[in-house]
Image 1 (cartoon, rainbow, N blue to C red):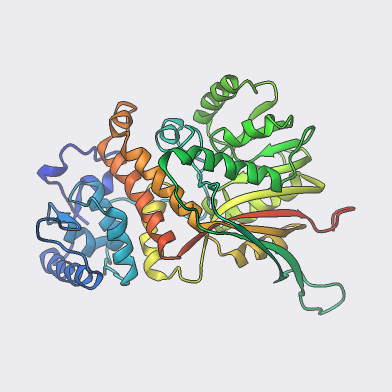
Image 2 (tube, rainbow, N blue to C red):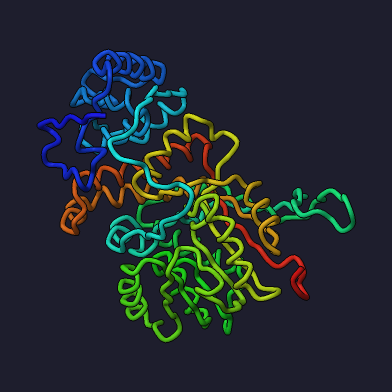
Length: 438
């Protein structure tokens, strides 16, 4: 496929952004682009989006949008936004509306670059500067739990994926405490930092972290989780496969006064093997790792948690999860996140988490806490915080394409939470046999 370069794209580095800096050129491009334009206009009409008038919902600045839609569908829509070929002051509303009407561009050609291997996580972590620019406390990239919102807990029988004792016995069920936190009310931007700390504290509570606990945070999530664990007088090990993350974490831990209680361990790979890291921990906490390691990586990830947890210990992990409403259109739209941020991104369903744990380890999920409304509000505020610091982001070396990409990624996740395609949950795991492993 030959690529065309246009004037409005000249400032974009083609080595850094090959899929954005060039517009795909393919057979019958003009015809297919006109067809894509007609389908896009129809989808906007069905979604109630205005393209003209004094206050349009979105503005198309360059017609190359339609060539990208014809070539790569939803990925093309995102790359066109990153290229500055269309814009909107209501980006989340636009994406929500298009997803809601099932808009499905018929992109059938390859992007201008090869998508990463989606089988496994590449081990990368978000830059510390980026976390600082888009979080409430300067070190938390994850969704929070706000003070408002009443929790309701129900003990629920959940299907087990482990066969019972005896020949040819079918798996049975076990009980899980399922807590649902009602949506937050009267939330302001200033509440984001405290909400993120509350999510971290809730995770530590679930893992039974207390004075004297030997705690593993795997992987490092920006600093807040480990700092809060150390302030409970726990001894903490933090694992990371990203060399660039080490110095930023060291500085945070020194500033927080916990450097003697928190120890950073550099791994050769994102998911540690038996020879990479050992130890037996009372508590393991994991913040939003499961969804980014890929299907193959998830199995290794669960085995690693199982291997490093002491008998009778607890694992607590937070994750965005897929719901039954996450269909083919939404999965296509998520291709942008895999292409540019998390190559192995795969949102599991709650049932898939149970199945993974039951079949891949000697652990069992014993509790779940669901808080999608809180995560939705967190993402909205994270986007607003980042948008309010665009100049600072540019000064830190994030170019215009990256800045638009980061805004788009927040808007896309926010749209999927609005539509109920994604949920947010914390899972508590412990060993099935409390006296010893099976």
